[in-house]
Image (cartoon, rainbow, N blue to C red; front, side):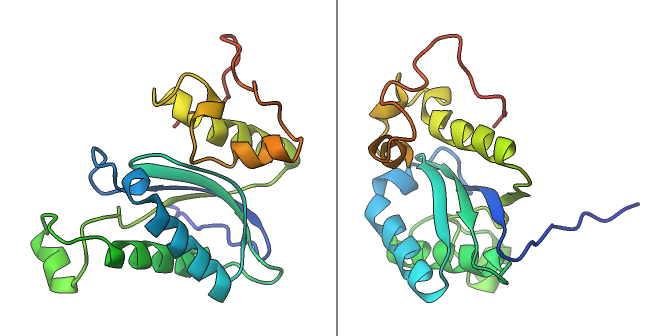
Length: 175
């Protein structure tokens, strides 16, 4: 049986989905400033660019570009998750395994990662990221979700403010 090997391309672009352990919780948006600070601190110590991002109540999607010669996104995610979890009040249920390891029950242990291999693929993923709050029923229009790089794309002239409003338009990726 073949083993799955993650493509770790130094200096590459990667699409991530990172989720809370309990998907019904709203920790990411309820504590958005703590999450932003965790990203800021990790980016200061281990630089990377956030090319697109959306933060929903229980999960987030983003595209990162790592520095040339660097493919270590796993350490960055571990640090972001740890910094965020340490700032939250305790009280969640802990499994025996998590208790033994001294872990919080905030995040799913793993994350989903995909190496972006073309500009067309990148563009489709950016659309998917920005449309995600509408897909999940949080807002009717992309522009109404505050925790998204969509607003930066509009400010930089890359997308119009009414982008994604057409009822016939839907990104091609599934969640």
